[in-house]
Image (tube, rainbow, N blue to C red):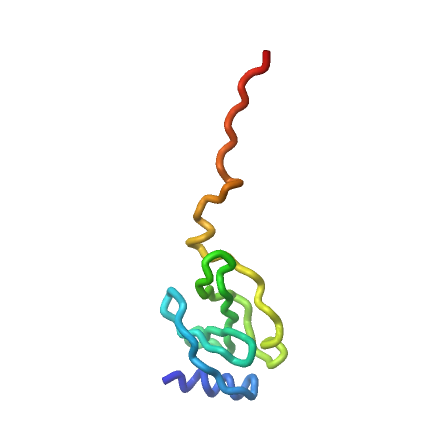
Length: 101
């Protein structure tokens, strides 16, 4: 299993990959060097996967990783859709002020 992904990692990066988990959507998460990656079916490159800054769940980004130097760049911090929909302390509606004397 994952023959295409193994071939793509060796061809693109000169490194083998390791299966490290799954995303909530069921896609396999791979580790290649310092980078965490997801391969979309039919794609000619991997896509970076990062952990949600709030809950730690793995999120698929749209950031392509196609060359060895791309492995060294850290992913941009993301917040998953579940955490983004949660209210925060600062987002509570302001109370109307009482009229002054």
